[in-house]
Image 1: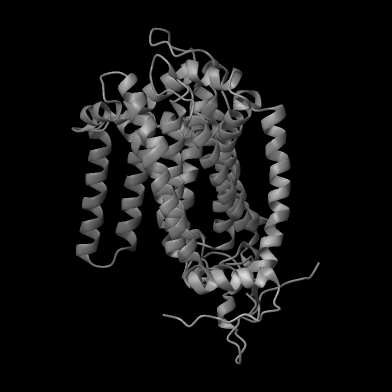
Image 2: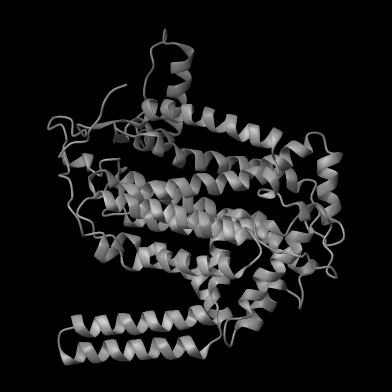
Length: 467
């Protein structure tokens, strides 16, 4: 047991209270020092580094508003839509809580997308932060599940039919698909049983998993230290006497104050959306979702919420023609592998792998491969730490055309998202197919293209201009 600290009799009351708690709960104070006041972060953080703390803020907003919504919501197919209307019209400030929660869902994905993109351009996924990145992608995956399960709860037309479409996708999986879809629905159609299952996952199961992953993400980050816009490891240059990184500053109070600025700007934008445009023209809350779910009346166009639409666009792009394109790509990859492989055994293995892949592509229908493509678009991000072979972590020291590649990646995601919102068309399908090939090509070919070009010399210390 640690010895109690003594405090002078004439010490301020705040000091006496602090010492009293520290003597009785020393673990909390040691963790505070480890993760805040004695956690040294690079001194050159910029605006891109706001989004991690903002994601944590939005998570708190979602949990708090969700608790108040659950107090009045009824997870019953006959009462769910009416309970949401009751929250909006009769519960004091219920409309504000509901709009904060619905707007918060979109805000969550906005800050998480920006946070992940910052990690990509500055090399935050590179050694020694591979596990930090993996935890981050797991958070993104669970967040998608959380959003999907919550999407059904208002029991509006788009909620009902959107869930119907997404759940039916699982039925396309060979052998286990129909049973898996039945297990998810809890019935042969989306019904009261489905609503109760989704409610349980949305309110209890996935939030617990999400909180655990967030804690793991932060602990892993603080163990290896934060990256910075230069991609320079600040722990490599320490003060020989104190062992403190020369380019590091305590997270508290410097970055807690720094993040307050970002929080203030974010809350102004968030409040503007909540009070003046909570539906955001139908992108945050679709108009069809203000109509009670009707199993007998299918909407003319069914599309998921905007943050799912890039992946939904990839799903729709996977037609029979697209599968044939995949076969050609596999054949070309196999030919390239044979030319590059050394030894007869290696060449034979490449040929066999290409043939097996081509046969599998032609064996199962395009709907199944659409599900694979949609899931693979997220799964492939887990491998980013090993796909990126660039000599420089940060985009600052990469060739100019690397910046163009990352810019094109953003444009393709916007285009896929836009096409996923709109009804399918021949031109739209073709553009979606090109975008899907670019998306996967961006990652699959990264070990090759990330090493090409003339790189700028990376400095030994971080570059920082006080302001």
